[in-house]
Image (tube, rainbow, N blue to C red):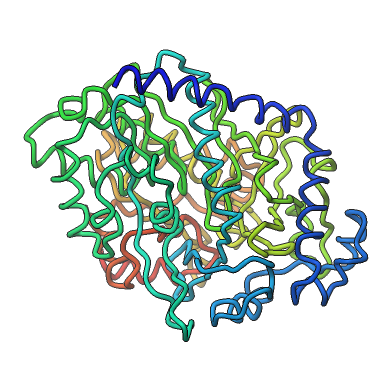
Length: 504
């Protein structure tokens, strides 16, 4: 295993040159990506409709092709799901990533071409390994296996010929991994792709405790559930007693800050590393590339062309859309992407802020639809997660999940924000927790602070300390347990809040 580890480490170290290339020439690389996407797709239905053959510049592209949300892309995607090809992308598309993102009853089906699998998702995995072994040259990562917590997939019922499938992006990736990557992962495909999550966690725990796991990749919430079940089965106090060689957790989908303390308790090792990725159904967009920073390097040569809408333009009928080179530091942008799976000027629904322009690094700031702005306070997910983390730190608490929504101003009451928070470790002082949550929000969001001044428009947050298992029961009741489904962090209405309160 030492020989294999040395060989694999050298192999992935050498990939760093490709990453450095797009860091040094970001705009040129993005222009080349756009040119290739347009040229490749000019004879598709979509390409002919918008005259791709005559597009020679970004301005041509921006003027000809409208910005699309999912509902506007949906007719093209459904045609492809029914088995028609060459609609939005010239090569056959047989996989679709099912993405709900929240507990919304409607699912999105995102096309995943072979080019996207190999040139975006798989390339992202390889580049992550390259960055990791260059940052930690003494790694023994390849002496053991990677534990991957994936979703499930099924035959696409819209396809009469039954040649295509859909599922969580993690399941699509795991099912299509090359042989060398399959050999290096655990659990077995049969277990990894199970759809019933309670039984799946049990089988994953019992199968993986026998392995030498050196890395874990997954969503923090479900990883915690798995690790805690492993401790129950083995009777151990920490995961290092089960996997002494564990050295890195690769995570994404939800912010890691609120879960950091719990992971440190489960894996009490100064040598444990945590790496964040931005890997969505639509593509692999970014990864943590520096040792001591949680900024994400925007990956510019993955067959994805990026545009951005300043959030102050978002609600306008014709919002301003800018290319990468016009972005500025510390402004909130909604991402717009065109991809090698046939998404064209597609509003992904995520918001980001640039922390660096040389090279381009970002932080995910939230979702375009996940915010609270009932009183002009404009609280976004990034604000909420920072405040939760600060309150946890002040009260030695760790959380499992949370959601928040407005309490509207009514007869006899002022406005407020109502929170439901489920803890793994309860706060030492609940009143202090609420105060710290409120104080941090006031500190980092001037609009919220203005509304809170002397309780003028907003009163102190109303916090429900939820019983253990609340969110899991609620998600299960909606048929949204596991996979890519996530509890909505913030909502600008009370639909979810009123449902959840019935479970308390």
